[in-house]
Image 1: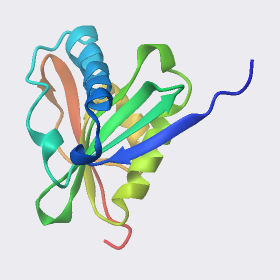
Image 2: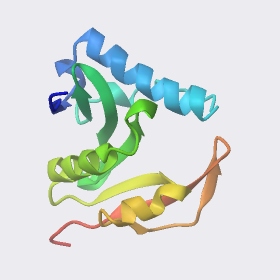
Image 3: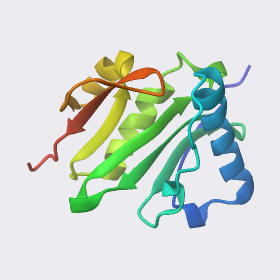
Length: 151
């Protein structure tokens, strides 16, 4: 079987077509709402903010992994909604996605709310715990921060 190319895309909301946004939301809902059994408002209004960037990986037009980068006050970037499709797990997509997200973030400080069992994964990408663990939607989370390269 020939090697299939994995493509990376980075876009603002206005650059997304309806079909792509549908596919990204479906992945988020399938994993966060259905698989993890968390009833929460997935459409929180932040996807459409001018400073938000959507980053995803595809293979043959199928979304494999996704995250969004939010612009927070003070120039801080917030990474969230990090998700890998069940059929694509264990192939290194989360690591590639994080590397590309951090390249897009650049020298800005960056924060995220890690599901606690994934804190070690984020630590390997330069994040450190910056607050106490808490439970959201029945899942333990850990706040983490990555300082800017200059700060």
